[in-house]
Length: 106
Image 1 (tube, rainbow, N blue to C red):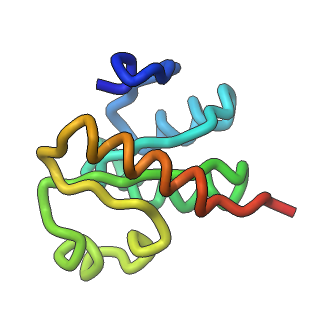
Image 2 (cartoon, rainbow, N blue to C red):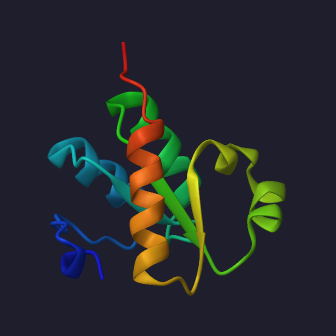
Image 3 (cartoon, helix red, strand yellow):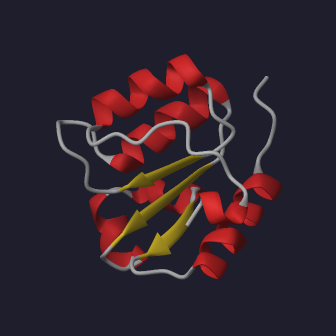
């Protein structure tokens, strides 16, 4: 879906720990993370860490609604959120908003 919209997918990982390692090494322009990842680090924690350390905008996705995920981790409200299953148009809109909301890291 991302590649059809002209985006390069530089990595696909299954664990939060791996996501942190890869993002730090590659420094992508956008992070798309599922809330549920293997390992001890969930997707919202990955998005928070990558955003604060590298200033990368993030989108988190889940099969649960935002309100349910917010009870798990309120930090989800800092990021664009997509509920699965979403369309390519919804993904494109979330990417645009995430990039526009982004503030430079000082």
